[in-house]
Image 1 (tube, rainbow, N blue to C red):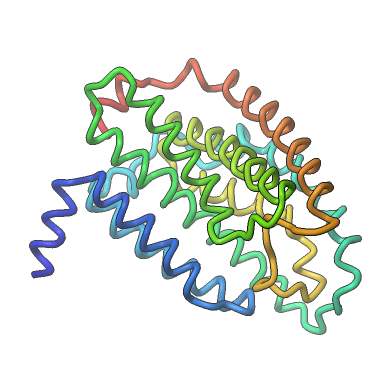
Image 2: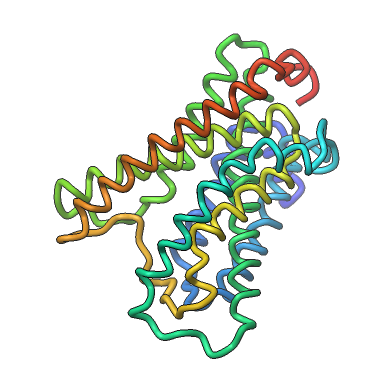
Length: 273
């Protein structure tokens, strides 16, 4: 039975990608994690699951092969870290209402959690979705546009699944967060196309998230109460913040596209992926 299931996944990459994303979202939404250590363990396990699904689609090519070094990916994408650090420092002032951690070991769990969050999300929303679409539609002219739209929108929308859209500002926030995350995902997708180094893309993503949430290293902010959509008085402010961040994300994407967009060998991707 298991052999038939695996053979079915190998023959139908779009089904495999759908199963992978649904499986990941169900795990995240149903498995309660109240500490950074628990969240780190969950994301580590999900990385293993995404490795299984990715192997069904691409074999070991995406997992073992890369066109460029990790350092190359970091140099091109470092602008996101420079952008994230001051935002993370500003977040420290918003967290002073929470109690400070009494053990420095929590900083390690925070760092590892975000690194594996980034790696898991890159494997799921970049490698799994992109590789499945490329594999299925590699002979179509629109394959790269399709991959960009599906992977970026799926990644953006995943951040607001289950959010309560209680008022107009909550809806605006949901749209803003989807766009902001989607644009970031699109930038990393171009990095993935250029380098096929999913591990380095995961590092860029994970440290970016870590710097944005560096407050978690110092203050005990309950992770099970975090939400990308706020209701009430803070909703309007959050919507404006998302609008500003989205514009900055567009600028950072433009920088990355100018650096590598015209250097991507799309024909090589069609032939090898």
